[in-house]
Image 1: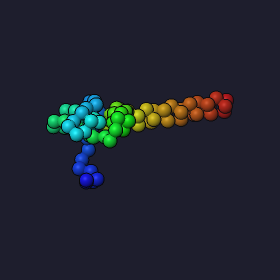
Image 2: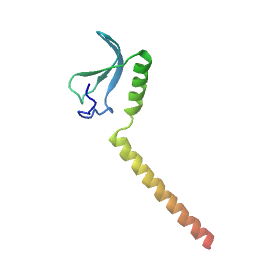
Image 3: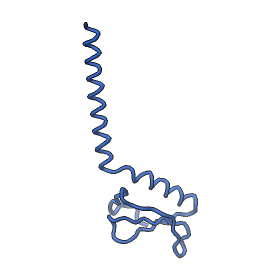
Image 4: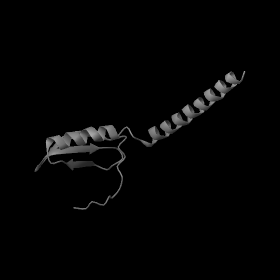
Length: 94
């Protein structure tokens, strides 16, 4: 068993579903235009498989594009907060 990563799977476009394979009843099937073919992950039990499905679905929302949008929103909110503080100070100084 090799624990060293071989690469990255972009999850943004992935689709996940439960699957059964010979000798592996609790699998997760990953399909994506980013990977050639299918990727099957085997879990030890139903609970573990369902947990993986839940986490993978949540993780696919974390994409580079969404991260950039989040950073832009933070900058905008900081600028708005600074502008509000300046306007407040001008109001107090009057």
